Amino acid sequence: MTYRLVALMPMRHSSERVPGKNYRPFGDGRPLFHHTLDALKGCNLIDKIVINTDSPTIAEQCAEKYPDVIIINRPENIRGGMTPMNDVLLHDVKTVESQFYLQTHSTNPIMTSETLTNAVETFFKNYPIYDSLFSVTKVQTRFWDSLARAINHNPNILIRTQDLPPFYEENSCVYIFERNTLIERHNRIGNRPFLFEMDPYEAVDIDEEIDFRVAEEVFRQRKGMRT
Image (tube, rainbow, N blue to C red; front, side, top):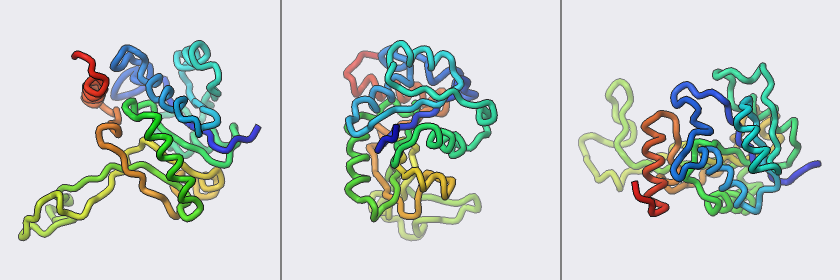
């Protein structure tokens, strides 16, 4: 079967910096990946959700709670921690065919269904003028390089940081792309990407233990939960 928009959320069983983070209890006690998966399921513009994993824990939980999610057992040759994400995604798009794909990570547990829906609507509204979309966080601060050279400001004219030209950080929350873009370019970002700005709190990403704790606090504050 061919779909119009398939969501991809690849996950490894092991995590070097935050052990077991993908299925570790988060916020209200649900495993971390359940939060992002529920956000994906709440976006009615997504036709199917695919999880590529080497984790029996994740596969078992999906079979029990999310039986409509497609599980791809990650092949041995792309299981290593140094495997480029684009190689994993290439395997996915060759396994589950669709014209368009949305990719996210389980480590973005604050992201909402509303934001995902907004991103998808924004992409299709602007396609094909823009051939892909990725989410960003606006940053307005003074940047310097490793040789102490000012990058985006004049140190002799200290204008307010909120008046500086903004930079945009790729926050890894949402990518939307065509199947052919990934296959032909070996990249999920096309030639003419749309920068989709997100709320910085919602774009919290978990890489380190401190990120996990910060994300939980943001989650609880937003849910009105007591810490």
